[in-house]
Image (cartoon, rainbow, N blue to C red):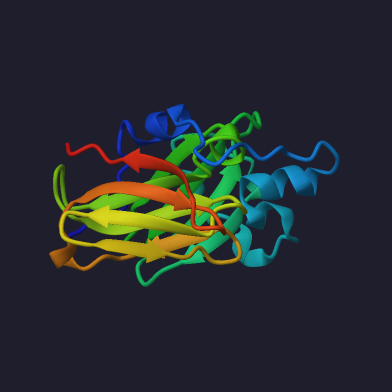
Length: 197
């Protein structure tokens, strides 16, 4: 049975370390909404009841989250993806929950979105070195697509208006090698190499 997303140990470290290829975008110094949308668009919109992370999921997250600021950014056939700031406000966290009760959490500094790669990702698989069963991501407003490079193909995935991506690749695609963020002009912002183990 597929595991819902494991955090690739080096993934977020690599994302944070990347330098943007297309220059930086300054975060507006005025409103909270401007800063929030520079991180993930959903954080700037009004909150609705479905944005609240269920308490059974919160109990299993690896980080203390500011639940009152959470947003559900994507729903797939077998998974829901939320974003929420950490309780101290220093991190933006992705929280994925599956219908069979699995929970995964990955956190990144806001600069990952605003000044660096523009996205953070969770990858579900059946074990180290296997093809992914799901790719879940949160992107900021400058990212128009994520390009997923597999062993046997490439796939361009467009985020929804909230900045969420839930993608289930076919088994024939093979192992995921890299993920690139692309801007509206088609230029690569940054590329994340996916560790093989």
